[in-house]
Amino acid sequence: MILANYDVSGIQEYIFQSRRMKENIGASRIVGDVLKVHLPDILKQQYPDDAGQRVICNWSEQPFSLLANQAVMIEVIYVGGGNAFVAFRDVDDFHAVNEQLAKRLLERSRTLYLAVAAVESNGQSFIEDKQRLVRRMAKVKAQMLRPQPPGAFPVSEQENQSGLPITDFSEGVKQNVSRLQWLKLEAIPKGNAQEIVPFPSNVVGYKNWTLELDHMIQGRDTDSFIAIIHIDGNGMGEQLKQKEKEIKRKNLPYSGEVQAMRRLSEQISSGYSEVFEQATISLMEAQHSESGSPKSHYLPMRPLIMDGDDLTIVCLGAWGVPFAARMLEELEEASRDVPNDGISLSACAGVALMHSHFPFNLGYEVAEACCKRAKRKRADEGGSHAYLDFEIVRDSIPQNSNREQLQAGPYRISFGAENSLAQMASSREQCLDDFSILAKCIARIAESKWPNWRLEKLYSALLGNSEQLRFYLQECRSRGYEVDMLLPIDEVGCLDNKQQDIPIDVRKLLLDALELYQMFDQKVWTCGKGGAE
Image (tube, rainbow, N blue to C red; front, side, top):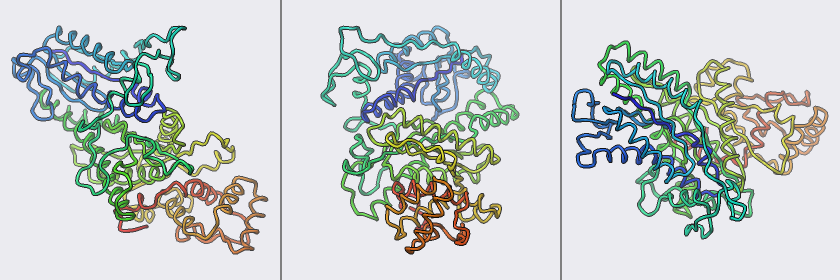
């Protein structure tokens, strides 16, 4: 028996290559179809007259049977996390499938890469076979060449970003495009076509995910931001290794080990997708109850990557940070009572807030970097709870070096924020590290009577030296504007006016809140909680 692993790589670069939203949506669809549509289709083509008996692709609906049933020639073990594991009885089938899948990938995607690794199996232990296969895949990826398609000739028109020749005309955007762009635009779900993530049903108001950036911004005459959210599971690799050891100790037969790993893969995929669906439904219900029927049938949100514990979502700018925080909180709740054979869904998130005309790849890189910072802080704090970090990308405003030093995030997010605060150490700095405090501070700023121009001057003063800050605070107090009006007093406490300064930890909190308060929809954070915190 041949055990093979198929891994699609270059996904992020492929999806976020274009500035056009429709191309990113189509690219997302192409990536999702490689292992879930094209691979099963090609496997069945090996035995077209009797594929239902000879080739098994519906792996989640029946036990592993290739070893026990000699009629079965090919069986999908499971698909998840950007990988597919397939068992072949005949090595010729393995080579034929690889050849056809490579051709299909070139025809349908143009520039995606497919890494394939394989090991021979004696049918004794799937866990041991999988571990060998993972090591083999690491070597394949390290040695893998990634050829690019030919570029444009000097006499041909070329596409600006990729440099590929203009060869096709897209009816969707009414423009001449490269073959790569044409493939992405043609892959956009049309009519009743299945989305990569089905839109939640039975919800009043919205009917589908957005297809256009115009549906995802407040308006062209405003500072219209979109948010790119990147969520990644915490310690998923280590968790799976531990589960593999536990499965191995049970001395299960080969098919039993396969079934155990199938259950884990299903738990991861369904767990994250169910939390995302429920968070989306809560968001839509909150928006509907607040403003009645929406002006558009399109929800200003679009999931672009939803593969196991790897999620990337684009949405309305004001929803980005609170929605990511809600997702993390719900994932923490779902992970509170994990059964012995289950796995924790705890995750960290990074959010990039950027103008809608910015390149998507830049926004994704920022969101990914924010997520990595959140994971580093989680590790530094002992490897528990979820963490979120965000960054506002402004090309016209150079980053202030003092701002980098005064970043308060990443912020801790855990289920039951009020209870978690009570359990924390009594130091204010540790308390201000919690996302719920940032959300309360943003709410206080939004409710305060401070005019926007004073808030902007306060932001600049907080970035300046202590003398500048003291001078501005004196001016504000003389006109009845106390900084305490902007702070959650229960957690922070009243500031000492005699000190004529703001402690560094409170200054960091205020800077983040002032930067975010106009791009933070409180309804998204508080929906389903019985009101604001």
